[in-house]
Length: 172
Image (tube, rainbow, N blue to C red; front, side, top):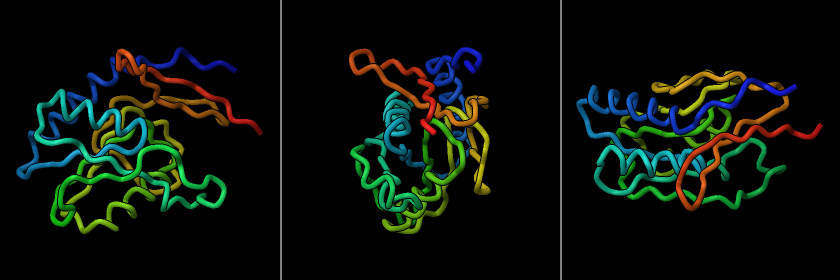
């Protein structure tokens, strides 16, 4: 079964920028962006630049705290780099696709290994539903239905930096 055409990642990114801009404007405190590897890290880096925020965005990996670590092992994606003091910081986690919430649970555990933030919020490009944990984004560019047994992944063209989505069917 082929789903409707995949959403336009660049158009959704423009929606994400608007939502994050509103969230930052409404915050009385400075907010630090932290992208979740790998698609969220691309988004965090680009948001940091496009919104003219100071310093580099942080990058955080879920690898060490995943509940399926025994099956997956250590991911080859970027590892956690938080170029700020987490204690007392207002953190905006940025991710590409929110599904079950398990990656986010792992990322929050990783974040707390570095200190205790004052607040943690979430901005996602796409929410595909199917939550297994009580986690909801503060900013979401779109909600997308994906066939059961498939995964929606963000891809980035290395030369142009353009974003697109890839739908992958998982083997049974």
